Length: 161
Image 1 (tube, rainbow, N blue to C red):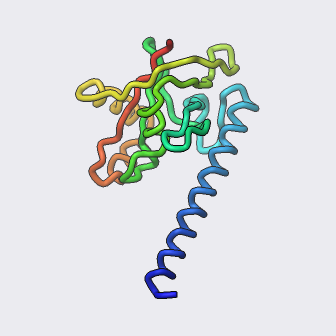
Image 2 (spheres, helix red, strand yellow; image 1 turned 90 degrees about the vertical axis):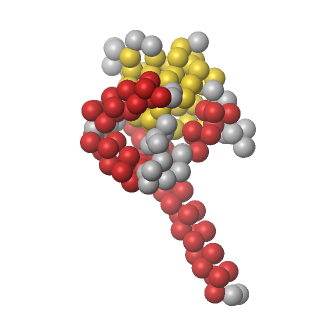
Image 3 (tube, rainbow, N blue to C red; image 1 turned 45 degrees about the vertical axis):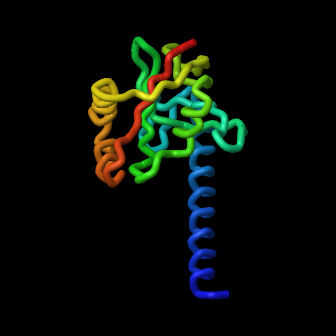
């Protein structure tokens, strides 16, 4: 095996290990969300998450992602921050390909409700105003913005159907 092939194998193993760790972390968050009526104590999330049920853009397989969400009079906002990665998260592509989705969200009675929604990527001033709301909620979003290496972090509006 050449050195290049060996380096590629090591890099691929690291990517797989990272993906598995993220998957395990997400599953733990999903489990806590459902067990505690939409409250997640890990990392101080509280009731600021929603579980987004989407369909894989390439695979067509069902997916569930715990995501930061802001609920307002029009529905929900979701930032595709990917923890500050320079690339959009996989679920971004899922919502672009299949915008009619379901979410689980903390309701006002201390439990979980579901909603059928349509995801629309915000643009221009509307996106900027929505993104500012996330940065006002947590300084972590400003850090993600810096780490994203110039990527403008997309924000989706989820509108009930």
